[in-house]
Length: 250
Image (tube, rainbow, N blue to C red; front, side, top):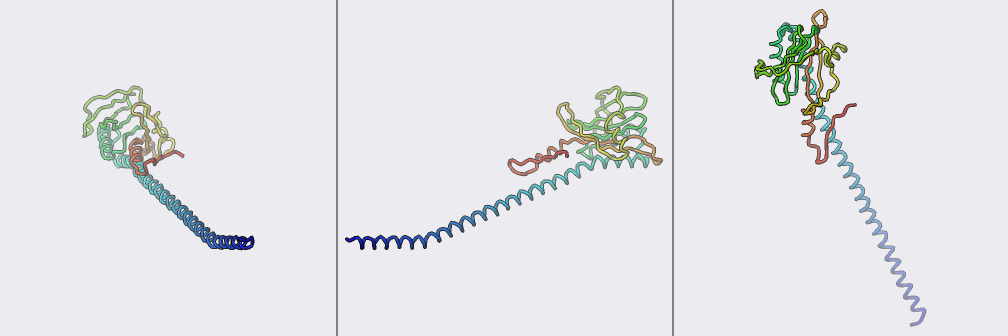
């Protein structure tokens, strides 16, 4: 075979390869580009869809938590308003400590989220009912002739069945729930209190100053609640395997 026929063969093979490449490469590039674009768009849209679902879930959980909090936190103020109205209408008498104590305990039985209902009069006397951590009820009574509070374990009707303890040198007028209400002159919340006795709990009081028809100050009504039920509610929220909900102070 001569040199010229060999060159012709090489040129023919090279031409076929160039032609093949010219036909195949753009086609492959188009396929790769199309697949890549479709994959990117699918990933991008999928990510947007996931973020949208996650955002909707967070919003639904936040709305549900807010509704629960509104319902939970309005009860102490509602109890104070009910008691203030009953006193103004003469249905409750500040001097009738036994009836007040029974009335407060009945309210605790109706509103299971509230842990205490009490009143402290301007003269120093006071009455309160409390729900203990074991679910039992106690009442506390103090008259203005003594600085000692007598706290009793009660039955379901609110009748004292035994003396639980005596608290000496007690004056509710020094406590935050009394002072804050007196200072504000309207319904208000006390600062959050962390009880370091076991079991540790967090609580807050709603307080309402009590006035007569002539706007003379008579005392302070207060209702307390624990954050334990809020904590249990948040723990039961179904978010995800690793999701948790928190309520944080500003």
